[in-house]
Length: 261
Ligand code: 5RP
Image (cartoon, rainbow, N blue to C red; front, top):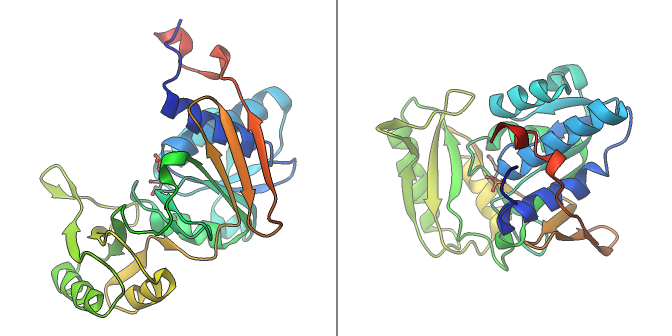
């Protein structure tokens, strides 16, 4: 028998459980990356295997692609799918307008392309990611390795005229070497503490040569599903203004690793 879930895992599970209810037969679905999105892929796999749910998924990272294949979810490329009905993904921070910081897991580039190519993006998250103003979580900026130090200097220079509180920029590392994204790029994390004008910053960063994309998701997400440690989830829809509350209990069989412990 496996251990019961911790409150944080319960929150992620519950948000993911609510999100997979949005998935219908025939949908083309963007599959996010991260620990919360991993719950969604797992629960989606259950629906595919047990209910014969007929969907195709476009993964946002090699990690998610591998998990989805193992779950029996049919995977296609974005170019094959062309346009998606729905993307479900996690976030590192979200504000009251559902603007996001993403990329803590290093997959921001594919995540942004996939979410932007979707009719709807739903963010699944635990309540700790909710903020009044974005910026406490370091903002990831994906840069090409060629001349990355020059790009970093240009990013720092750009920050001087932006409405931010901190200006420290650090190269993301993986042990002793730079962290490398699925696209072979580096990530510079910006420790800004507070981002006063996120749309302006997102545009300014993407104008710097060498910057591939930044982790600010502005006006892309319309629905957030917030999980709590007791299995309660709150769903907020920006367009309708609707807010609903549900509760989900984790059951042993939902843990595919339960018998391996
Ligand atoms: C990956 C992401 C993730 O969605 C974000 O980091 C949240 O991850 P988690 O659900 O593990 O907290 O943007 O690039």
